Length: 395
Image (cartoon, rainbow, N blue to C red; front, top):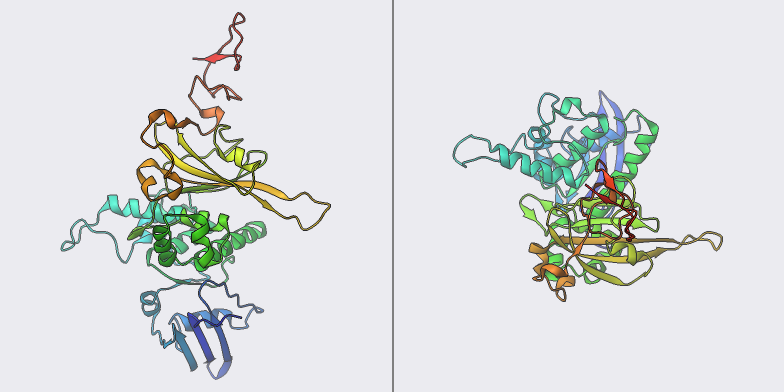
């Protein structure tokens, strides 16, 4: 049973239109770190309730408490200022403005605080950071009008994050999608993202991560999170005004497929096929519950300190094999001072780094004896007089 004070509490909420009562004695509590769903048939008053909570409509009765204090929003501006983001059924996106302009329409970053000149470089940089948080792969300069319904909805969520919202209210979040399959998929993704954000509140999690130097097991316990959840959350802490250490995160199965990925670094993941076999994550799959460490260097010369841990999830039945996979978390060497797992690594030695790549198809390394395929677009040479681990060279 939850005993902490609720973030949002509603008591006896009521609303009538033209003498017809549409809401009567609606009461509920919403606690931090939890997802609360309100379910009902069409016309049951779900959207009306959301509109009352955010000041779109005035209440006819009842009390709203925000963090234990009376809250009477008179407009969306009041609820926005209180840290409540409202993602409405009809999306509030300006189609003739760019993604970045939609995100920072009310508070664009300025070149000089005293002059009304917008800093385009900061605008786009801040927009990219927010887009990464919701895994929206579009350019900040893209016109919102050419985006799909699902992408526009993610843009709305990113805009809520730009306002430093701590409470998200979604009014029928899948209604703008055209495909039932896409609606189901987006529902799962939104629920997972919201659950992670509420289970591990941004600022509290960021500060605790700094305090324990990103020791995952110490970090996850106060929040009741799993090892994987804590790693994933660390890769999202890139709010422009309160950035955490930039990490990459991914999960790989026993076949080498990357089944989850997120990055706040320059690290590149393989989009198709297997990842680099020299990456220690593949070894971790076979050694569950041990944390392995590695210094890896990508072909662009950037070096990363990373960890990988093999995990096993029960299948729930003797007849089905358990699920085995590994998760990886890493940061650039320049950030490794705050990464406890890098303490024993010799970060200063150039030859201490394992030369890894994205995948064999796009890796330019010529001296790798773990290569499975030649790089795309490169002519290969075969010398029948020489026998080596890799039976070809390439130009």
